[in-house]
Length: 125
Image (cartoon, rainbow, N blue to C red; front, side, top):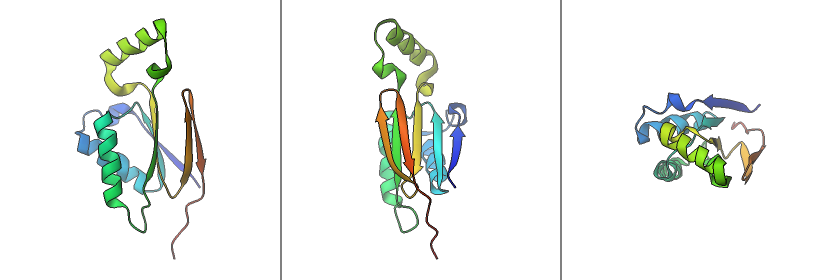
């Protein structure tokens, strides 16, 4: 069974960068796929990947990560709208998907959607 956990941006916005990373990584380590409203900053994404690499072991194989940012693919008036929204509300626009590698086999991302291919997590005996 695949479990999705939706995390509203308001749940992590008051945390430090390390706190955000720990919270999201701990959810992924529970074999849950995290759907984060919004996105992390570029340096937080890099730190998440670095921290994940340090914690890989027999039980935890790592994570798969994908981000959709609506302002990246907009032009004209829509781009202006997303830029103003970003100035007012920060990193709350977009969607971040973080899943454990033991469940998420691949993430295909195009500008407007994310396709997530999963498999059942194997139980160790």
